[in-house]
Length: 570
Image 1 (spheres, rainbow, N blue to C red):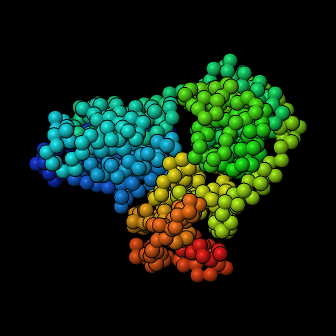
Image 2 (image 1 turned 45 degrees about the vertical axis):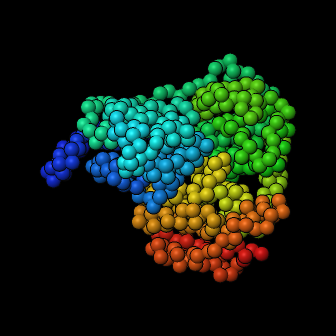
Image 3 (image 1 turned 30 degrees about the vertical axis):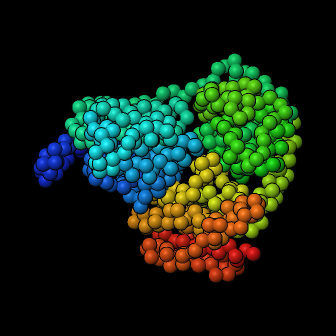
């Protein structure tokens, strides 16, 4: 993780203010070297150069300092969108997303995004102001008054702290980065009372510096030896990789080759082992063929995956052979699928330990495990994915075939994503498929794509294309963020697959003998709506025009929305 000297940024802090700013701050009773500056200098020192949020009456002492610190402010049109955009940005940069909200409604609006980050194990820092010290629980009708914002947030995030000083706030930032580096990355909330936020920060410049990353945690050697024996002795080993394995991709690929072991990933682990690799089944753990492959193995390695029911779609993972689990938390070792050997540590440290311990086990085609016909499993998975919805699967595969091979694809909890694009798009690196398989929220895809596009725009000529493929119901949850995308000047293609409302819920109602209620929705003129936001709308009027229109839209600069009516597919 890159860092920037806090001492250097401090020199550009209050000393960089002009006389007008100094006089205005003095009149407002605000210290320019305040807690807001100290917190942001610390965050900047860890390498974060972009924040998401909405300026409000109470959070201006965060926003004041962003220009002089070289931090880009991305203003969403709803704080939920800010949180999802921060998540997309974080996945593409490898750094935690940062959201600045105002007190009360601004913070509470962001909590759905916080719940997503918690459920999907993603790093997020939410900064918010709060009532001044001594005014807690006053219930006197102050602006944005909230009974207990810290407790409300604490029920959702990994931890939520209401700090009592600038020094405590800075320490909370350091603790957040320590969590992201050493534990399960999950969101945190730091509440700064208004008098703390605006008051003088008695925090030395050295305390605002990024702290060195602790060494990676390796697993117990005895456990590694036992695990290596299980995997080396297996005649048909299988590897399952989740979101916690993404930093170990190269090592895991090498281990799979040594064992001749097919690799199945969760959707959060998609691309950890390149999906073009001969041993990659893909992110298909939710499909019966992949589950049968895992359950029939006589030696399963599960790395950084919780194997939750949301990933299994009613299926079960219950291997007949022994299971080795690798996770940063010991508590995960017996959750959902019991590990016979549990190796606690960072995947990027533990997987090489396993490889070394396995030693010179035969690799590739000569190893019995390689007798698994991975191509046949892939084909069966494709058949099963298509069986969930032929129309959606056909649409997704035609869309995916037109996307650039290096495209970053964002999706929502809409059928075109989880029934289609998740299988149709094959990717060779992690964090290139932006989705929330466990929290399964609507309104994620568009803002996450915006965050990713902001991150990619900073790469200049190396920027990769970003495409959001979402259903009409999901897109309406966040349609206002089209204005954010246009304002930020990013290149972004949005594909709206329009099935006229909430297609899956209508099917759920039908399965229970319920007539359609509240699921067939009035649709806007989507291309015209895109035009109204300053983007460009592209209607697909005939099925045979899909590929041509999509290619043209992707080649056009700026924000482009392609409207694909589902009725074209039958």
